Amino acid sequence: TMAEIVAVTGVKDGSSLVKCNTCHSGSKVDFVAVMQRSVSDSRTSLTLAMSGNQPSYVGGSSAATATTAGIAALVWATNPAQTRAQVLDRMKNASQFYPGRNSEFGWGIVNANTAVNN
Image 1 (cartoon, rainbow, N blue to C red):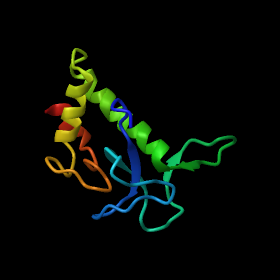
Image 2 (image 1 turned 30 degrees about the vertical axis):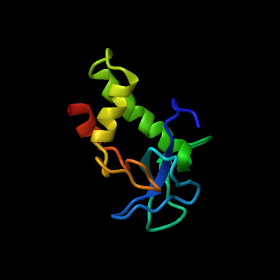
Image 3 (image 1 turned 90 degrees about the horizontal axis):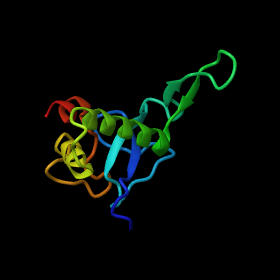
Image 4 (image 1 turned 120 degrees about the vertical axis):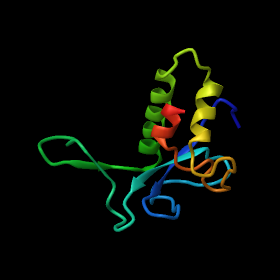
């Protein structure tokens, strides 16, 4: 275990948390981001085309990590003098399970608007 690591995974959209098809869960997860539509196993986030004009799809824990890193950057941008711990605390405080922690999905989904504005 490395204390400096923040583990992120993807979940399907909907009211209850279900990990996406290419994602993980467990006690090491800190945050989650919605990365797959629950209406179909093959429906993930739309992205720009890899080549030509045909759009591609992306999802999974890698995309969830990038999304969560973006939220962290937005929080940090509100006050660049904040420490890493302060940014993470704001994200935790804006997450769905705070002040608790889910055994499979950590703090849960971060509400970016709340994290940035509080």
